[in-house]
Length: 214
Image 1: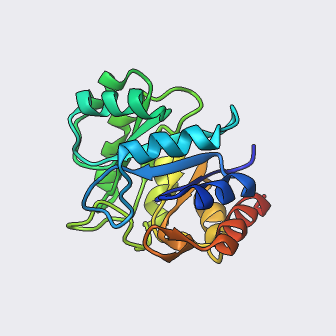
Image 2 (image 1 turned 45 degrees about the vertical axis):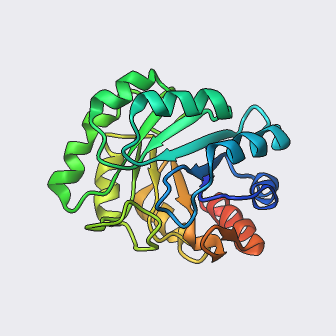
Image 3 (image 1 turned 90 degrees about the vertical axis):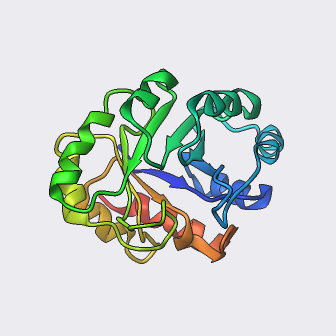
């Protein structure tokens, strides 16, 4: 099957429309106020209403340590399909989402990567089981730092629907896919002209290169 592609950190309709036209499978919206790519829930709701996503495309809200009751409320009010938990949430938080959420992890070493499988039993079949992002001691993602592909390749062995993030760009996504063999790839800063503003040519190139890899 073709590698799935998630374009994340979208903040406006034009960028989201370009991601759709390029062939993205997931559109990501960051609902973490400290992020330079933050978008308010009311804006997400308005944007999704305007886009009218086709059935094969899912919208993803990215949350960082948000109480799960609030996550569920935002999903209902915005029309988002899935919640990506990108903070320090426990595995019980995923269980409360009843198939509408998946966890992002930032393992520092192989031992931490192996422990990530506690999070992989909860998403629906069309969603990632897990996202693997680059480790950073203080940031929760969007740093542009490279994830450890060797760690990711090990996680794929037990987590077939792995979404790989961290430092991906159009220029390296083919190498990442060849090395890790992930179910999907995720990009935010790698297709930007500025935080929260996408470079449309880079979006198109990223999706095309991800799909070109055998």
